[in-house]
Image 1: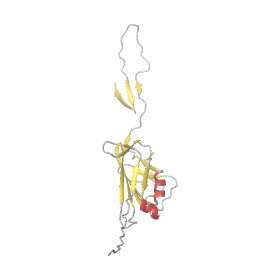
Image 2 (image 1 turned 180 degrees about the vertical axis):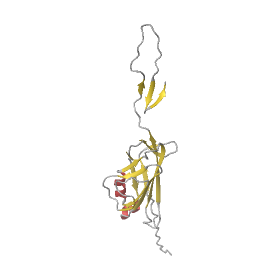
Image 3 (image 1 turned 30 degrees about the vertical axis):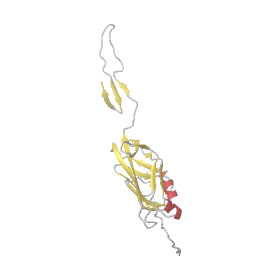
Image 4 (image 1 turned 120 degrees about the vertical axis):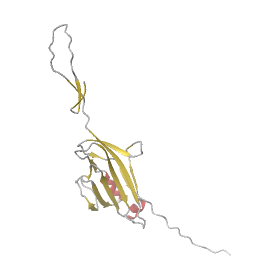
Length: 185
């Protein structure tokens, strides 16, 4: 005899995916180089969550910087601000929006270095699907930000005029000035 058994397999929800088109350092981290005291857009960040997009659920995004600030500039489609708000640079910003809106917001993401900081900072982007499909799926992207002094063309510094007699030998002290720091003599 043949019996029929119906089997239903409930699909597991996908976790959000966040990626960035950028250079990658020796440890596999995304990184961006910025000049001290200059705000810089962080390009190429994308998020996708098939479950949230299909059901039009919200994602929660947490943006944070260790030494500098993250900013979302211009008009953007944030559905709900948890902490922070548009055009304000803070160490931590949390908001909720759809997948498409989050990608538009990422086009306006700016890093602003602290005025007193030089070196490596970390920006972390943490995405949660808010348990929309019964699982609290999350994804994190870390970006290393290298803050350095603005590069200036080196200048040769020395006396403007040297007076000497014919057939005399003179020693002229010259220096290379890079960013107002005398380096070589």
